[in-house]
Length: 137
Image (cartoon, rainbow, N blue to C red; front, side, top):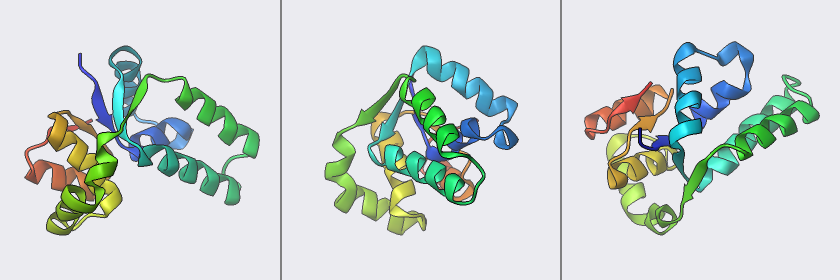
């Protein structure tokens, strides 16, 4: 198996028991053996999701920190090239597909590398499909 592009929405599903699905659990197993690639913004997005959960009292600070530690131990590799593409290719994809520039960052990475895109985001899934990117789960 090869590494896949990991969107924040899938990582968030791993952090909350009520969002877990057999498909996302299978992706976590695949990640452990094959690894994943993420745009650099993934780290901020995941941290923001967990910080929001703490603010809404969905998680304690200790629980959020524990989840970040688990995610940090996974074989996730940041793509450094995407930053240089943010104001060009990524922005153009966002405009053409009607998605946020953040979501376009995942899509640009998947297009550039030919990787599968793991996302639960409906708009991003639709944009990826239109661009010929294989979407999982």
